[in-house]
Amino acid sequence: MSNSTTSRPTVDVLPLIENHKAGRFWTALFSVSWLVAFLDGFDLQVISFAGRYLKQSYHLTNTELGTLGTVGVVGTLLGGIVIGYLGDRVGRKPAIVVSVTGFGIFMVLVAFAQDYPQLVLLRLLTGLFVGGALPPVWALVSEFAPIRLRSTSVVIVMVGYSIGSASGGPLSNLLIPHFGWQSVFLVGGAASLVVLVAVVLVLPESVKFLAQKGLAPERIGRILRRVRPGISLPADARYVAGTEVTERKQFTPPTLFRGRLAVITLLVWASYFCSATVVFYLTFWGPILNEQIGFSVSAAATLAAGTSAAGALGQVLIGRFIDHRGAGAIAYMPLLAVPCLLVIGFVHLSALAYVVVLLLSNVFIIGGHGGVISVSGIFYRPAIRANGAGWATSVSKLGAMLGPWLAGVLLDHGLNAQGTFFVFAVFPLAMMTLLMALGRIQRRLPATADGSLRPVTVPAEGATDAVRRAREETTTPGVSG
Image 1 (cartoon, helix red, strand yellow):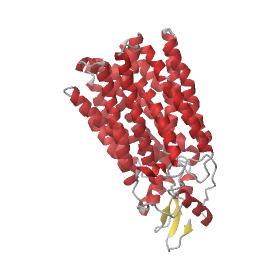
Image 2 (cartoon, one colour):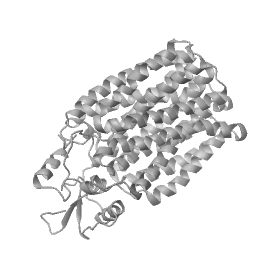
Image 3 (tube, helix red, strand yellow):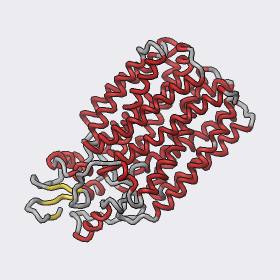
């Protein structure tokens, strides 16, 4: 703690977050965040497992089915921008509450769609809230994590997303034959509304966000006492996040391109776009492609679920490397994915060999995707972090729209299921190149820049004037990292 020029004592929240140990607060924060990500993954991807039944029920072509997958992603694109803005405007927690409420309600309504246009509209609205949920969740967990665990914290949450995506297959096999395709949407929506209660009661607001915005000091104090039980805080304290400068300016998109962020933002967006293209191609078309290759309906859905679980394993494998070695470490995942996709595209494999290579490809593809997600917001200061992650997520949805649509077009124009794997191998190849470039830039960032890999000494009791001035410089628009 330190005394400012006013009579009110100043408390820097950064050392309090950086030096705290895992306990009940962390457990509650990550458990609820994990559940939100789980349901987000389930609600967005379950339509791929129900796709075969939707195609029969509504008499859809492959292109129409691909369009149905794409329109949900259009919603996520809009949601990432709109709710990302909300997360930096009024807080992480309100943005998460709005998102979970929205995708829970519209998920239920999908089950009552009377025709294809209604189904398209409801998937668009569901996607709007699904796309808005994760950026504020990423911002929240990373802002409560020590620097050494910031990317790992996001990876932990995204493992929940992958397992949620995977659970759609077994649940569809269990419910749809007996209760119809509507049942999986009802279950997903109802579960989301149940988790909403935990979101409201358990999740805190980010103290870094509140401090940098100069908001609600009494609320910051209450949250810090949850983080560090027994801590003594002055009743009239003024809270800062590493600097005494508060940021009250409204966010505008050009902020993401000021100074060194111009190149960083473009590299993050482009790598995220390439990753999302191949990931959403595999998740949306996976069950149908598996059927066309020769698996039964049940086996195809189970295999698609297995690929999501394999992806969760990939995220765990890469997660700890990112905090220590940066974005460049992620490039190994798409590099290893390329030969897997080419083998499936060119070689006639036995059923067992196909399963093994497909699972490996998803370890690398989804693992790399989780890695990109984990760094999508770390280069931005807290006041614009949800917007930074939200815009990156929304740009990636252009790739997520391209993947399902392009595969549908390729299939309708005569390319077989095996051949689509060959076409989509180009995207992880490009992603690898982009991540290597991002990694080189990250290694050169100064210790005071957000996203830097260089160690920075965080004072246990406030900041000296010299350190404070250095941190102030990193929040200046022209030089922010």
